[in-house]
Structures are given as C-alpha cells and as structure tokens.
Amino acid sequence: MEKDIARVIISEEKIRSKLIELSKKLLCDYQDKDWTIIAILTGSLVFLTDLIRQIPVPIRLDTIDVATYGESTSPMGESKIIRHFKIDIKDKHVLVVDDIIDTGSTLKKVLEDIKSYQPRTLKTCVLLNRLGRRQFHIQPDYCCFTIGNEFVVGYGLDYNNKYRNLPFIGTLKDECYRREGVLV
Ligand code: IMP
Ligand code: MG
Image (cartoon, helix red, strand yellow):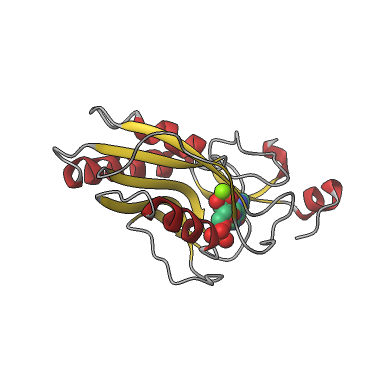
C-alpha cells in the first residue's frame, strides 16, 4: 500500500503529538461539562478512536453518516445524511468530529441537523482544514492541520474507499488514479 504514496504530507509522529495537544485543549474547554461527541462516518474513524483514548473522562459517543464524495475525488454536490445518530443531545454540549473540512458542505448539513435537536453548545473538531475550496462560510472550532488543495489519503481518509488504514497522511501517485479508473 505504501508504494502507492507519492509524498507523506503529515507523519504518524506529527499526528500523535498534535492529538495530545488537542486532547489537552478539549479537556480544559469541556471541564465539568456533560460532553457528547458525534463523529461523521467513515473518514473520522481513525482520528476519533485515537483522540478519544487521550480523553480520560466519561464522554458520550455516537456517529452520523453523510454521503458527499462517493467514489470520486471531487464533490458531487449537496451532502445528504444517510444514517442518523441515536442518542439524545438536547441541552448537551456537542462536539462534531470529522476528518476534513473541504467545501464545508458536510459540516453545514450536519450542524443544521444537530441544531434542530437543541444542544446546549455545538462545536466542531477536524483533523484537516483545506481552505482553498471552501464554498460555505464555516470554520472549525478545533483543527489539527491546515492543508493545500491536493487530494490526500490515509489516517481515515480514502480514495475509492481504500487507503484509510495508512498510519500517516499522504498524496497518491498518479498511476493509482489511472488504475482505479476514477478521475481526479
Ligand atoms: P466537504 O463536505 O466538501 O467539506 O468535504 C468533507 C468530506 O469530503 C470529508 O468528510 C471527506 O470524507 C471528504 N474529503 C474531502 N477532501 C478529501 C481528501 O483530500 N481526501 C479524502 N477525502 C476527502
Ligand atoms: Mg467524510
């Protein structure tokens, strides 16, 4: 799998130390709060599982599934919630976790939906922030890394549903896009 990587953008070590920094900040900001995390599937899974294990307090956790990209590397239009979270979030402090904010379409959709359940507070936390393609005026409250316009895979992020299990974040060689037959 690693032979398909053109360039490592963020190493395993950098991710690990950033997560420790982030968890400290979250623990401080959510001190003594009844705290609920809602993670957006599937890209956030690796980030989520590493992050919550740095949080030694009881948190509530659920997931929501949103379709945006399908099998391609460019947005397909409006995001759609395809599986809902189940826990009660009324009057709770909710933190939404995602792998990356790109156009902002996914987070916009999820935030609108969660707001309708009247949480006490609602914040967002992403691993990656790509500023160059934003279509909606949304900025994450917590963000680990800002990246450029290149499409990235690894640490939960996929291309054509593959490469999520790479421990670092990198770009793919052009031949991988040609092989999969899905254009960039
Ligand atoms: P947005 O709705 O345009 O902000 O896109 C957010 C979603 O698109 C993320 O949750 C990812 O699943 C996906 N995405 C955006 N950029 C990338 C990328 O570079 N690699 C893999 N997935 C991406
Ligand atoms: Mg996603």
